[in-house]
Amino acid sequence: MSDLQKYIGNRRSADADFDKNFEEGYQSFKIGALLRQAREASGLTQEEIAIRLHTKKSAISRMENHSEDIKLSTLEKFASVLGRKIEVSIV
Figure 1 (cartoon, rainbow, N blue to C red):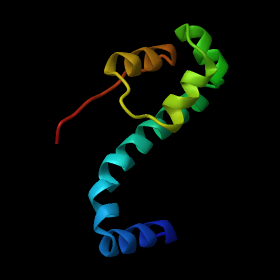
Figure 2 (cartoon, one colour; figure 1 turned 135 degrees about the horizontal axis):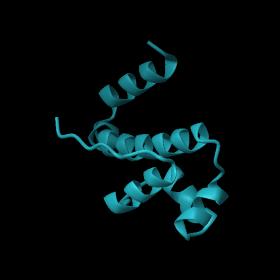
Figure 3 (cartoon, helix red, strand yellow; figure 1 turned 180 degrees about the vertical axis):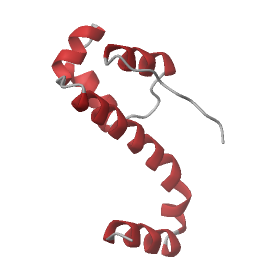
C-alpha cells in the first residue's frame, strides 16, 4: 500500500466530512486524469485539442484539472478528437 493510500485510509477513518465527499471528488479527479493521460498518449497538446474542439486552451485545462459537471457529449467529442470512444458502465 502506498503512502498516499495509507493517508487517504487514515483520513477517511478520522474525518467524516472528508469520507462523505471523497468518492465524488475522487471521481472528478479521475476523469480529468484520464483525459490528460489519453491526450498525452496521443501526443497532442491542450492547445491542439482546443483548436480541434473549437474552444480555448483554458477550457481543456479546466476539464483536465477540475472536471466537474462535464457533459457526456463533451467527453465524447474530446475522445473522438483522440480517435477514441467513451465507455460508460453502471456497476
